[in-house]
Image (spheres, rainbow, N blue to C red):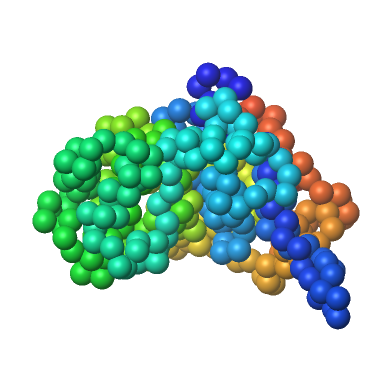
Length: 329
């Protein structure tokens, strides 16, 4: 693995067994994540977007080993995460932290903010009680909260303030990788921008590497260096953010981007409207998973699954489509 690569995910799979019948035997699989590969360089932000249920959050939790992957390889900072022992995994989790979507659900409602933010230091045996209190105060200041917040409980804060507490907890141990699992989707638009700017400021200040997961393409464009688009457990397109927004190639990416509202009533926008329903991950279609909803599908799309490969024009532009060269401008 290159010295500049902090995280490498190779052919990651997360299959959940479906059981039924009198003997409760396995009768099928839910292919939540089915062969995802990518790398993130140090200091970079990789955004992952897709419809609900495409597997993006499952990828994040599998990277942290909150879920046990079915197959694949994960290397973090040159270390094999998949086969790591529990003591070693606990040690390396200082460098891999997550911000959850709903701060109210992820914060212990029975603990004060001071106790919540002190907990990471206690678990990893860092500092004296006086030092930990000082660190907690510094964390609150860093995320824009008053120092007297230490004696208050999560329910006493607004949604945006609770998310700031969640961010403070995630950065407490000065991680190298911060996974943001839809961190602004439950917030008002005005608060979203504040939280996004806070994350960008912290990234610059702490030299953080971000894996940013969202379904809002406008949000992902604002924070990401590169973007991976997921559909039904697979990445279908990956490119740098600016190029992907200017010239999307995969029909699914084109449809997603065309759905972004344009704040100009005089400007008419042509929409690529998707038809049909998202197939079940329990019984995905043969060939390209997207072919049943794709207006450009040909015979090969129904029979042969396309690989995620580079385009002729750019070795860093990955697309999983048999017809990709037809859509490149």
